[in-house]
Image (cartoon, rainbow over all chains, first blue to last red; front, side, top):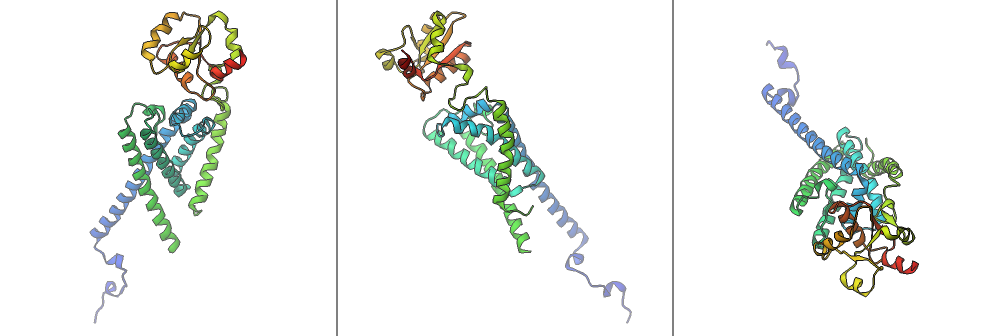
Length: 173
Length: 141
């Protein structure tokens, strides 16, 4: 019986797939990765912009934090100097995927705290002039503040859960 | 990097301290750690007295506190009746005058807000906040 060389060669599951199916699978994976990276860059861009705005004018930012009437003045000053740089460093970590999960957790925690502070200020009837974007967002309405924060939070949580599940898979392998 | 999430967060938090400390040193003359008012915008009771006749005293406390007692010659200008009281202050103000705003004590914010509005809305320069407010004035009286 004549056997063709192809018939004798063992084939893996991947090799048995139709070429067109394999192509679609790979490109879908690439598109997915590309979209996740876009989200990384978009959030990093937001935090670099927000951090830079506040780092340029820490005096104004300290005054903005003080408007929340939640912290003593010296602590507002310390946060005004520190928080913008923390945001910028975490944003750069998202871009370069270095200390990635740590950066995501810090940014998620900070946006949660900031959202709660915004809600608390609104409940107490304070006329706040501070937002994610420092004094630049002073004319935003409360719903705009809240919607922006929640959108950023959703993006960060999506990235964080993905990073955590990837990490679990890597540890299990 | 395979380090834990907490370790990564600690490294980032530590890294951010460096530029923050640098900025704090760079801005040391523009912001006070003790008070929300910049050192250049604040005067002590002694310094304010030295202004002599060039000073206009502005009382930013509520009406009833002003009615009880105030710095001699002070003009009432608080945020509660800002629009009503501002013309009275502007009538007394003249170019070259130094405005000294005070409220009850070191912890009150009214003088800071009134001073800020005078600079921003009335476009005035040489507006100062009295350090320690009315309490400091009484002690130095």
